[in-house]
Amino acid sequence: MRPATLITGASSGIGAELAQVFAAHDHELVITARREASLVALADAIAASGRPRPTVVVADLAAPDAVAKIAAELAARGLEPQHVVNNAGFGLAGAAAALDRAEQLAMIDVNVRALTELSLAFVDSLARHRGGILNVASIAGFLPGPGMAVYYASKAYVISFSEALGAELASRGVRVTALCPGPVPTGFQARAGLSAGAIARRGPLALPARRVAEIGYRGFMAGKRVVIAGAANRLAMFFTRLTPHAVLLPIIGRGMHAAGDKARQTR
Image 1 (tube, one colour):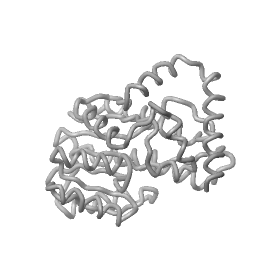
Image 2 (cartoon, helix red, strand yellow):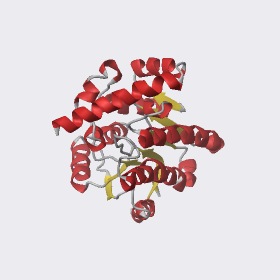
Image 3 (cartoon, helix red, strand yellow):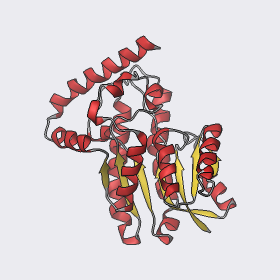
């Protein structure tokens, strides 16, 4: 079986840029997401750059059989993961009690359940190839998030799970890294119901997706447990950890409310 790097949520944003970065470092790729046309376009672009064309697997990680489908596709092509990059995820802005419950549970399915299943499904092959798992979390995972309560909580899970799993798998030569970007201008904001200007207002905290991908790749290959993308975000998280949640909660809530209101006005 040939070793490969499996990247979820690769059709756009950070996932697509991670695919480009891994390909530039000579990794054979398997890219997966829901949107086949976007995956095919990415695979074509990588092939046009002179790198091996990635294997495309269309899958919806909210479906309970998605991981089994991906595993079967890999086996059929004689591939097994050396690295698993769990990038797929989405957020929803608004009060948890007011948002659609099914959509919020689907968010947990993708951000938490599928990430966990993919992190555990291929441990034996990761160990054989001395590889690892790169889980894309967020600086949101260090904070409570009124206005995006379930999303922030899901990313807190990703950070905690990644650190603990990394400690458990270290003896088998498997590294686990949680990549924590700040605001990144991608399609995430539109899906979440946030205004385009919500990123622009974050100033130095915002980074382009390609830069986040490069930082994440370097940190992952260096075996770091947690990688906060960008000096401004690292500084912000340092001071945030010193600030009581009683102070943070209304500040975050007001910011999320303003971003959501602006998005509704511009639709």
